[in-house]
Image (cartoon, rainbow, N blue to C red; front, top):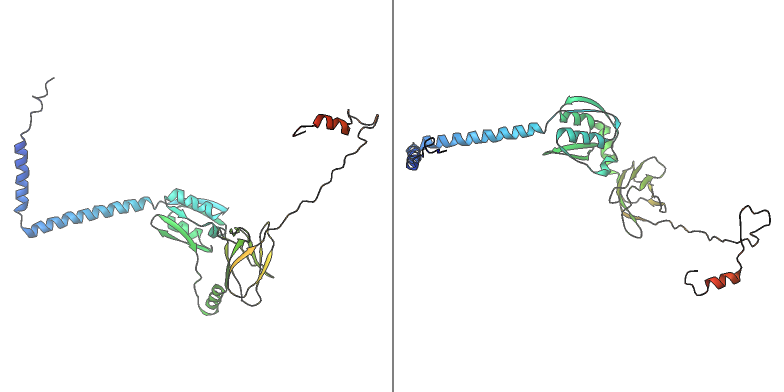
Length: 275
């Protein structure tokens, strides 16, 4: 089938002439009018870009629905991550100090849900881009005696690091207790720990770990540095096996038994590497 009659070829010279005419008309425009035209094009471009950013931000600000009772903070944050599209960055040592979460919300914004989740928690959060970052809550000084006590409690913090005495590897999850009190903490992934005390006089720390010898340290400085624990040595007692020479007793042994003497063993096992 011949399409030449249906779609006649266009004259390229005519198209070029139209383009040249449009360019010449643009060049003949007054410079002030030309600047206004270019500014309007830039303004339209900026508005379109801002609209795209708004749409992108709206897609990451979806409402969330969560219903949990006495759940771990990590479990609740995972649901926030799945429903909102945000990433959650959290450290294991921070989660270990978090409290259980009870929350029942339906179709609310992520910000309001986070406020309910972190209410009463020793942790707080910050939104950086599309990431929710967990961080330790800083004690703020209040008014009167309350503020003074908070500052004093923040100053009296003992810090240290617990390592294996032989391999120098960090002891993760070791227990650190202030002797004579119920205050305790656990070591982090790098073996470090910190624990708040009421005062610095007559403070003794008891450090213990499964498989290691418990050690007590008298605190003379808030930064006690590196502490090492020695592993406990386990010894196995000697076991002596004695054979009964009278193995077979006529008409009393319920199974068939045979006695093998020394001569038979020497004959059959002579020259064998593994008799």
